[in-house]
Each structure stands twice: as structure tokens, then as C-alpha cells.
Image (cartoon, rainbow over all chains, first blue to last red; front, side, top):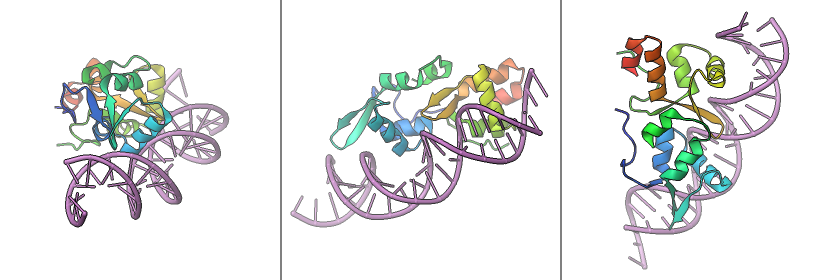
Length: 70
Length: 70
DNA sequence: CCGCATTAGGGTAATTAGGGCT
DNA sequence: AATGTCCTAATTACCCTAATGC
């Protein structure tokens, strides 16, 4: 049911994909990257976010629901 | 047939959306989050509630109908 | 090399979180 | 004790244009 906006086996996600998953504006996500809150790698012009770093971002505390998705 | 206040396939919901679903003030819901009654993930400034957690909560409260919708 | 499509980045208005009070 | 309303500060979303890659 709750389809992921990216392949389940993907290790690196685009800004757009992460934005869709968490329902935030891509711009906000780029702000997090600029602020160093969300680690990301620049590939050419755009950004790639690693799944592990994404977990770390949201899993500051216990997040049962997060494990199901990431 | 009841329209949900959020996209059908969304994995994460905003406080506002869940508040509309339960028909409570967003502030009340944030209090539930603070109290640990409702698991949630903080992304930047905002909170996101996992759909799975919401299902679990509904099921735990013997609310099969709601759990089905979620 | 040119045009098309997509993403990044800037500025501004709107929304949210949190505290105090009822 | 718990919920809802009012208020403020900070963050976010929407608008646009420029830049990059294909």
C-alpha cells in the first residue's frame, strides 16, 4: 500500500525522492543539506542522499515506524 | 468512502492531517507526542507520524474500523 | 551546438511548534 | 487533569529565474 517513491534496494536517493517520502519541500531538504544536518553527496549538479544518513536524520530517538520504511 | 485528509499512499503524515482525522486540536496531538502516547519523528521543525504507528495505535484501542482505513 | 527537461537557489508569504492562560 | 484558544518566534512552502546535464 504505502508505496515508496524509490526502489526498495536503492542505496542512494535523490532530493525529490526523499522529499516525497517525508512530505517536505525539496527546498527544505536542500536547506538541511546546506546546514549540514543532512549529509549528502553532490553528483554533478544534483544531490544524492544515502539511506543510512537518512535513517540517522530521523532516528534521533526511537522511531519504530521508520524501520519499516528505511 | 470517507476521504482521508492525506494522500492514500502516504507513509508519513503531518500533525495537522492526523489532527483532522481524529478531530482534535493539533496542540492536543503534540501533547500526545510529548507524552509518548503517539510515536512521532521530528524532521527539522515539524513532526511526522508514521502510518504504521497510527495503525498500531488504532488497533490497540480496539478500533478495527479505523485501522482498516489506515 | 542547440533546445528540452529537471534541479538548484533566492526572496517572500504562510504555516507550525511551543508556552502561558482559560 | 486535559483540551482549546491566543500569542510569538522560527521554519517551511510557494513563487520565480538561472544553471546544468542530456
